[in-house]
Structures are given as C-alpha cells and as structure tokens.
Length: 75
Image 1 (cartoon, rainbow, N blue to C red):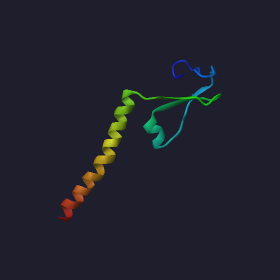
Image 2: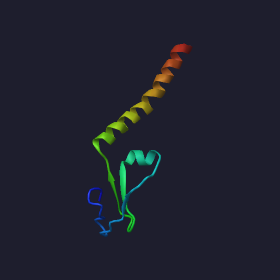
Image 3: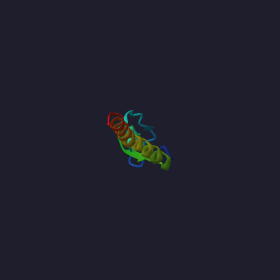
Image 4: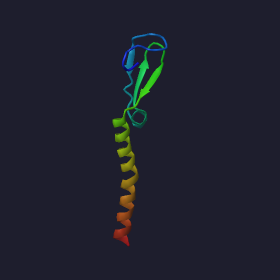
C-alpha cells in the first residue's frame, strides 16, 4: 500500500498516511490507511526503531541519573 498507493483489500487509490500525533504514532511507525474501506498498514524502518530505542533509553536513564544526583547531594 505504501509503495503502490493502492489498497490491497478494495483496490482504491485513496490511500493516505495518518498524521496522528503523540506517543501512539511514534511507537507504531508510519500508518497508511485506505480512506475508502479503512484498511491500514503499519510500516516501521530500522532507523525508526533506532530512534525509538534512543528515546526509550533517555526515558529510563534520565530519571535514574536525577535520583542518583539527588541522593549524592543530600547524602
């Protein structure tokens, strides 16, 4: 669907990339949806997964670093 622009379910050429914001779109990848029947495909690339791993790493590491720093300064 991404490459051909044609829905494999109904054959419609009215295929668009969802422009959803927020974390759900980031976790899923690029979502292509047929406007005619609602069929969707999710595409994820290696680059997308690498970026996601960096974000997850920061989400986990930054609070731990902050807690460690607070314990070091107060202790």
